[in-house]
Image (cartoon, rainbow, N blue to C red; front, side):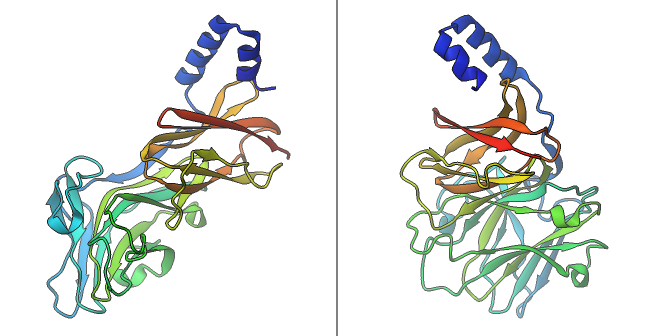
Length: 304
């Protein structure tokens, strides 16, 4: 049985307090490693980045906007700092590129994470997209032949009355062992513009957190991982009914933290995280979700 439960059942509050202190001060063996972080505080494009306009009118490009954001985005603050990267809606078939500098040493489990706000809350607009692509050679447009992910801007979500920050994450494991460049491409159909902030590439035991854009949960929930037992990767789903700082951590049977899968401010939604336990031994593990003062813990079994 999980050591937290044992201690609580015995009523030994002194030992519980000591154990909690040790867990909270333990350095995770899978501590997050940030390989890129950009919040556009100084310029757009930032130093080392490129901004490219491929459009019929040739005038719309990514630019820097300080918070509070312009009227079509409401009065939102920046996600990090005080500035964001903004692209206005473009002529049909227009493309506006924001290209990162070289990101060295991608490994299995790395992810690209960013926050996005769409322009306008709703309307009869064509389906604009944000495309994320990879180049393993250089930052020239022709080299971005590999696809990472896509966000349908108008679809987040259709009919939404509010404009909010939404977090997106795509795994980069397919490029493990390589250096890469990332491009963020506003693919326009004469519909929506968008705002980007807090673009990061990081490594962790989580291979990516994905939000279901159509789900609006009404209760705090931590679902049973699947598959279970697992070897070595499993999926963990959880529901956050209220925006707030959220953590999802994994502990071994002694109560020692072995991984932090989520540590971020998440908006209301249903999320899925892939947990890779390749570097852990067979045994029972516990995953603990905490958000807005609510806590839930479930058990999972790693069998190698």
